[in-house]
Image (cartoon, rainbow, N blue to C red; front, side, top):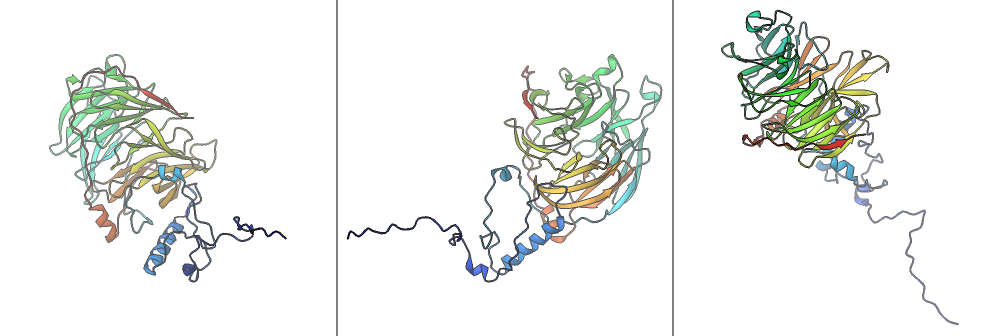
Length: 458
């Protein structure tokens, strides 16, 4: 009788899983409850308390010498998802999030909280500037000191007779000069320490028709000022009698937002024509164009990665999308299932967390029926904090204090609320950590006829 060699068994029994990756020493102490994590990709429905519990469990496991990651005890180890890595950015997370109530509240009478206006800014010297109808006020939240800077509707400054009010406002980098745009095509630059009008100029549209200055932005070198208007024009201003190069027809209709990158390389403009365009400083050479389905108002540059731009809205109005401005590509996108849209975005210069203001509709046929939720993201899929929940008004503005420890929210109920974003002693060490400033020298490059690298989002 011929004997045959028995072949080794190479396949696992289908009823008995592999035991090799199991950590049985850890299993002796395991409580049998899996970590909930953040499997819910809808950032508007995530439970922030679960994030705090998970941080506590991880700290407890480290203190007891247990592994902090999922070692496969009773539950399979989670596989790495390449899309998760693309949705992340550098973060120094706060040890104790959970923002509950504002530190103080200020009244904003006659505040025109419209989609196309930019009426608030927080300067480097600590003063909040607000354009309230025909007047501009400065307020120091720490001392409650309020200064009436100017009355815009001054007939001595213009050939127009009455009817002017503030529509855009922006501090320079040092917090000394304040640029004010109006609904009559003109831009005023004030020295706020001396309360003196330094410069007075016009948008390029004023020679044909009146336009409204909807947004303003200073270059990081503090030398140039760019204005955007309701006719879609960008005007580069250095002196009141000098426009550098030709103006740019940037958008068809209102220019909604202007944001300069932290390194001074790019200028991003968003318009009512559902496009976002990137320009190269200082002569606004075309660089990158993104075509959306809807207008996008919310934009923010990452403070430590100056090429990373976050845009809220545009595709579905609740979408947040990350772009790389250097290579003109989309990095990642997050779209919550909850019906809402992004009104404002702001990146913390201290922690790297992204704050997003959402307006969630109750009635799809009414824009006024809804409530506000402001979420704090450590990446596109993880909510680490929430505040201002259930407010029946839209939060159009998110403004950081000069030191980055406080954030101000302004809503359509004519109220400005200031929140302590960093309030624990451990987090103050994070806030006081040195922050890099990668500012490029601005030179007068020759005009270029380069066209946009186009990116259509569907």
